[in-house]
Amino acid sequence: MTKQELIDQIKSKKSFLCVGLDTDITKIPDHLLDDEDPIFSFNKAIVEATADLSVAYKPNIAFYESYGVKGWESLRKTWEILPKDCFSIADAKRGDIGNTSKMYAQAFFNPQSSGLGFDSITIAPYMGEDSVTPFLDFQGKWAIVLALTSNQGSLDFQNFQNTDGKQLFEEVIDKVNTWGTSENLMYVVGATRGEAFLKIREHAPDHFLLVPGVGAQGGSLADVCKYGMNKDCGLLVNSTRGIIYASKGKDFAERAREEAIALQQEMQQQLEIHGVI
Amino acid sequence: MTKQELIDQIKSKKSFLCVGLDTDITKIPDHLLDDEDPIFSFNKAIVEATADLSVAYKPNIAFYESYGVKGWESLRKTWEILPKDCFSIADAKRGDIGNTSKMYAQAFFNPQSSGLGFDSITIAPYMGEDSVTPFLDFQGKWAIVLALTSNQGSLDFQNFQNTDGKQLFEEVIDKVNTWGTSENLMYVVGATRGEAFLKIREHAPDHFLLVPGVGAQGGSLADVCKYGMNKDCGLLVNSTRGIIYASKGKDFAERAREEAIALQQEMQQQLEIHGVI
Figure 1 (spheres, rainbow over the protein chains, first blue to last red):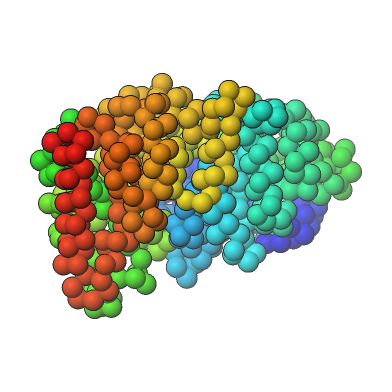
Figure 2: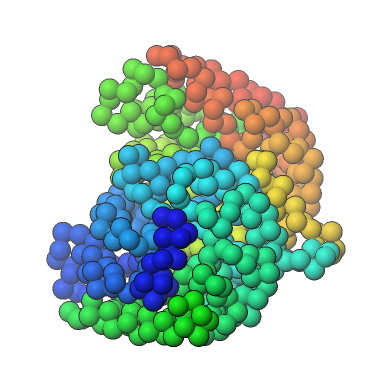
């Protein structure tokens, strides 16, 4: 998917919602557990209930991998039913030396090789340039690089500061910017630190940012938009638990839809306030 | 596996060789390609040919993942035939927020969940404490955290330096040290920078180090031992291409064994020089 196609979709759906598919068998409704593949059944219902409200889906690969071969089969089937107009994100946090990152790119971008053909993958930048660029070599695909995450542990290394007062996450953005463009690179920036978006936008004014941490993790959508939205929107805000686990009953998909509608309406308001639509 | 069991094995085999299983279907002998699972056939032959010479095996997960469901099945079968006296390493470079790292730990440590029960996994530290500690919660399992890697891109961020002249990889070791012990934590340190082991040992005198980069990537075994070996050996030196791709003919397993013997003999000499045996 191109950047312009993503922007067009945001404007037409009046939404920049990404739905996280962190599907945990212990948290899905009991009545699905007798299905042949309960995780896939759950995902299918969630996707069908939210497809007109969200612009992106983000399966969290760990949740599938934890069930081994069977989990990978659930992931493959889930990828197949993701709406083709939506941006798909393999939330995998991969990254290794060049020849190995190339294999990870095959795993998530090349359906002939792996059965999966996501639009994008999340990347951990610790190993540097040759760990990131193999993902950028795939035409039409995106690398979404960790910059400033929303978890407690983000304070351990991402704020490490050099003699010029520059923090590691800033150095990451500045260097990674030179390996690609805003047409094939995004950054992960956690919603839990609204004002941090000011600094992020100094380094990456035009890039899309993937933003976890709104809702369950405590981030404010209004703050994220105030400090982080640009003329193209430039944000994909993820919500997982608030949507997919809104109910553990037979009404889980309807309740997921209600939560997605509420978020879409807030997002529409923010897009209007900031003049994107 | 405990640290003492690993040390005992090193002393008894007079080897600290780790064989990397980065098994690429385009590089294995043609005569295996008609097998039902060529990757597994190849791994089985390599493991059988080297089991008495190596103390650890390290499948590189990307190479399996690139074939999707089928690749995960090859990985599962490979894990099953790894010798139980050898230390097994899932070279996966994982790491995410706490609840997600917990799922990755299930994926690689819990055979009831995933079909895989490796002794250890490699971890990228960028997301900090809650991304690492879920792996340490598994009794008898190890986290092997990236410190200073052997690739060109390692220079991009791992040497980022703070006002005290401390580099990021040093900060990583110092902080990660406080989350576990030398009984459940190791570090990845590339062989391509022999003298860097001096600095690493200032921060982690007792920890085992997983060392890629000897051979194909140009690192010197003697230098690694000179600067990095401790009284327990404290090193697992990985070799991949030099061993597993020593021949593309029908003699691939014998040639792999010859290369492993040559390395084991060099290693025995180093263990004697440094008084470990």
